[in-house]
Structures are given as C-alpha cells and as structure tokens.
Length: 152
Image 1: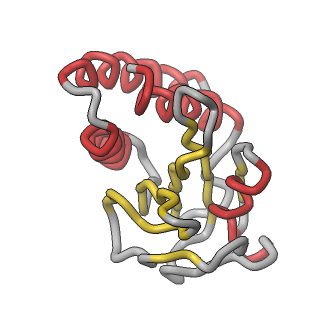
Image 2: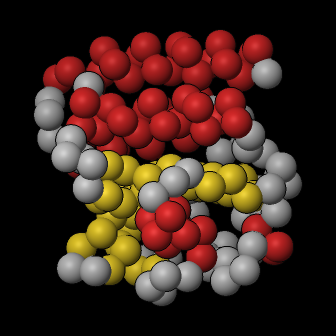
C-alpha cells in the first residue's frame, strides 16, 4: 500500500506541473492517460470515455483497441455515470452487464469526470489483466487526478 501511495503521490505532483501548460480538457486527459498507463503497474487499458449527445464515446486511451461507443446504461462505465460515483470491480466476470471490449480484462476501476459545475462529462476507465488489481488507494488518488482535468 505504502509503495503504491508513494507512486501515486509522485504522479500527482508530476501531473500538477504538466497540466499547467494548457486548460484544454482533451490535452489534459491525454496527458493523464499517458502518465498513468506508463507509470502504474498492472494498467492494461487506460482511457477516458466522454458523454456526447447521450452517447458514451471513447476519447483518448492507451492499450488495446477500445469499444468506440458503449451501450447505454450497461457496464461499469455507465454504472459510474448513473450512480455518479467511482466503482471498483475486482472481477469483471461477476459484474452484471459488463461490456467486454477485450477478453484479457479481469478487473476494472472507473472514476467519474465532473466539470467545475459538478456536471458529469464522462469517466476515466482503467482495466487490468489481473484480478483484484484496484483498491481504495487507487480510488483515492485517481479521483484527485481526474479532478485535474478541469482544476489543474
């Protein structure tokens, strides 16, 4: 736990410095995804899905090819949006309605992306090829990191 927390602390500081260069949300999301994907062990797929005219569409990501549009109100990403809260899934096979974009995905964490007015804009979705990859430490830091998209 302590080692993971330390790594997240360093990433959070790095991102705070990097994200001061622009207020553009797309650029900030792309930077967040790149840093997380390459600096955190076990992150198999890392990306943002954003709402657009009622559809949840992939934005920027790193990892295998993504589902481009997620079936409405199905799966972990939509559950996080519908419930307006982060969701940790230790085993995706046990999550009702899980959308399998890649069969190698075994566990998942999804963090809602809210703008400055509190309106939900999308989610950060991270998959792992290992079971039980994510915990409350990941949630704690990832929520702070996602908040940087609109508040760096």
